[in-house]
Amino acid sequence: MRLLRRLWPRTLFGQLLLIMISGTLLVQLVSSSIWFDVRFAQVFEAPVRLIAARSAPLIAQANCHTTPPRIPARYHLRCAESLPSPQADDPHSRHRIELLLNQALSYELGHALKARVLKLQLTDELGRPVLWRSLFGLRIAQAHLQFAVPLEDGHWLLVDGEELQGWSGESAWVLISDYLLRVYALRILAVLLVCLVAVRLCLRPLRRLADAALGLGRNLEQPPLPLEGPEEVRQAAQAFNAMQQRLIAMVNDKAYFLAAVSHDLRTPLTRMRLRLERLEDGEHKVRLQQNIAQMDAMIGQVLDYLHAGEQQNLQEVDLDRLVARVCADLASAEEPLPVQGSVGKVRVDALLMQRCLQNLLVNALRYGRQVTLRLDADSTHIRLHVEDRGPGIDPALLATVTDPFVRGETSRNHRSGGYGLGLSIAQRIAASHGGALHLENREGGGLVVTVTVAR
Image (tube, rainbow, N blue to C red; front, side, top):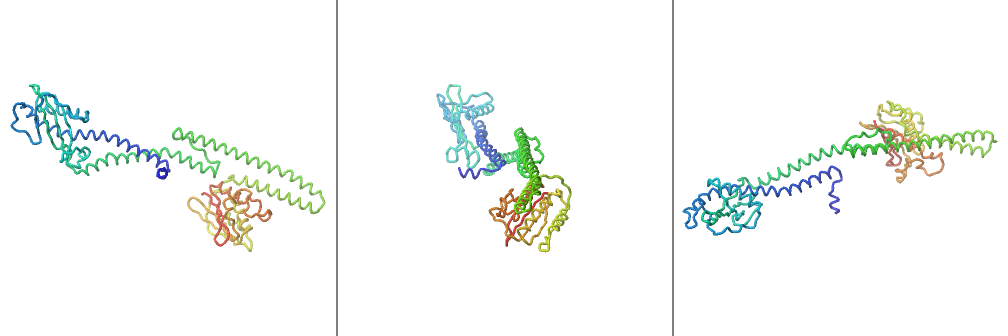
């Protein structure tokens, strides 16, 4: 069972191809029995006609009291008072040979004759019965036919004759290869072509459905699937579109709820600020002001995170100039933030891309040193690599550090590590542009954060 599971194809095309070829071979093997039956009759046709032609003069002169002057070699004649029982063989084949024999004898004698076939056999040169070998000509075979003809005096004339098989003079391997080529190889090739066309036609909407499912994680607002193809595929596409609309509604409701709560929290914070102004200066007032500032900053980052996944204004932007401007704003004498490479213009939301770069550069400047930004591109994507020489990130956190409120720095001090939304915001911005965010520790220490954006 394990071997069968390993050999079983994983793709739908492979499974359909295996099923169709196996079914075709099975049907062909069953139908080959009919072919062998027909070939068996064809092998006997020429010997039967030849035996009828050579036996007709003997039958015309038949007399149970005298012996014919000349009897062909491998022929025997004898008389019987009653009709002997036929040999127990295939009655269907014997009936067909009997019809052929009577037709040939009637033609040779000039009148109708009712001969009865008693024995029908193919033998090799040693007298052993053969069947499939003779059909393919692997060995020389002889057709042995025994039949009885009624005489006018009430006796039966038994004629026993042998002739070589009626087949082909070609090599046996030529016959076998021709049979295998035309009956099996060409049929399997035709099944392969039909399967290829059928699978391509049927799998095209399924592949479109799979691509849409993969793209759904990157962009919920992608166009709905067209309702085309077979009925089952149309129903799947319709169900997928309905699911997409439900997901969009759920995400919008969640985002609306968080945005409303975050926005409404600023109203009591504003009142708290006004009341703090009336208090006397002191340590408690300073701490409350710091707490209010922290809450306000956290609310601001939450709102930024919610808006990061929304493309609001896509336009052609000179990304090289945008990167140079962001680096110039954040550069200092200790960290000049050099830029390597160029990518030219790309269709993005300039404000969101600027916020993405700022978050990544601020993180790199906060934790590392020797921060550089490198740009490269290909025909489908552009990549922005922010590299630094710092402590890097624990490998166990690389897969989750971009989740909301997850920080690579474990202290509770917000000044040392923020609120854990900077990388999450950058990731959502990259995803909203058909890209992704990838983090990797550098050899020798440090971190490489790569932003991929689709062209």
